[in-house]
Image (cartoon, rainbow, N blue to C red; front, side):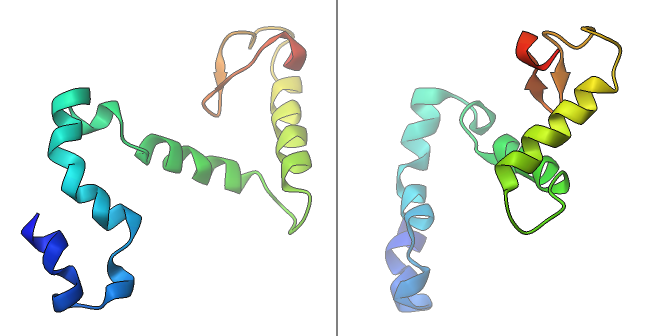
Length: 96
């Protein structure tokens, strides 16, 4: 907590972001939610890297992602991926 309160003195005020402020509440969050893995954003951020790899052009990102996921699914055996994860997404019947 002392680090967070002294950050402006040690560095500069722009470094005092929401993420830095959230460190003040980290110990209480662990008491409420348990270990950090239970509420960390890292799995989502890592997953975003996988999605970024599917984008080939600078525009129409959502359309590209839908198309790539559909291509991945269509190259798999018919309906074998319903309810199974592809790139971390559980595919439903609409993708089968």
